Amino acid sequence: GSISYRPEEQEDADEVIALIKAEGRTAVALPGDIRSESVCQSLVADAVQQLGGLSILVNNAGRQQYCETLEELTTEDFDATFKTNVYAPFWITRAALPHLQAGSAIINTTSVQAYKPSPILLDYAQTKACLAIFTKSLAKQGAKRCIRVTAVAPGPYWTVLQPSGGPPGAEEKQVWGDPPL
Image (cartoon, rainbow, N blue to C red; front, side, top):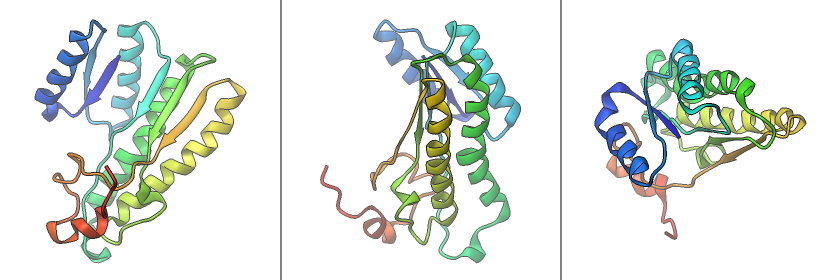
């Protein structure tokens, strides 16, 4: 398989690649900023070339930062969140579709925020709602080609996304609740 990641995440990518290779599997590292359409196109082209094709696409990248009020949300941050969470899956999926055959799968990671938005994650929640609808619409197109398109909408679970721009400590309980696991 291949993984894409931001160049500043090289150390983490190296660790994941090593884990994949330790299991005897092929692993391709593809660094780049997916907020660029040309990078998204190159990611797919490089993955196809290095792996000999595609059968599964997982759109899992996400950007999140909290803002107490709409007035605090800058256009730059709003744009970066939409480019990462909405544009990139569109660009990557569009580039991947010609390489996917019947029986292939596309999996998008949306969020509970798409259905139960937090007031401090305004832009993130919007993007995840966009991705949920993108998945539903694309699933109808994919069905005609026997390509399964699904989404995963995780609930309030702590990931590395939160310390990099998620809710502040005082909001954690409100946003994350008390998950059973």
